[in-house]
Length: 165
Image (cartoon, rainbow, N blue to C red; front, side, top):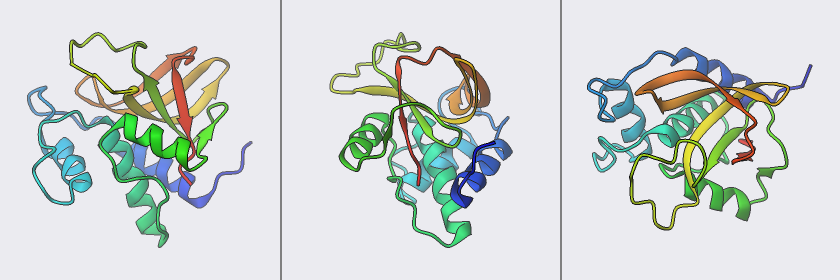
C-alpha cells in the first residue's frame, strides 16, 4: 500500500465528503458550487455560475492544508489550463497518476464537445484521483453531471497529472 502524506490523506477524505453535492438548476449554481467558486474568487462574485471543477479541487486541497496548519503549494485557481502551466513551471507534473494527485483533461479529449469557445485553453476539466485499478482511475469530480460525483476514467491518456504537495 502506498504511503500518503497527511495533506493527501486529508484531501482524499474531504473530497469524499462532498460527493453528492449538486447544482441547483444545472447552471453552475447552488450553495456548494457557489461556496467553491467564491472560495477561489476570495469572496467576490466574479466566478458565480462559471464552471467549477477546478474550484472544487482547489477548495478541497486548500481546506485540507488549512486544517493541517500548512500552506498549500497548489495554486488558488479556477482554470485547468492555469493549473497545468503552474505545475509545469514548478516541476509538479507527474509521469503517471497516483492516488491523491489532480488530473487535468487535455483540450480535444473526452468531454470537449460542449461548444464553448476555448481558444488558448490547454485543459478543460479537473478531477482528483482516489485509486488506480489497472488502466482505470477512480476519481471524484466537481461539476461532473452537475454535481460532485465518483467517476471511472478508463485509459486516461488524454490527461496530465499534478502532485498536490
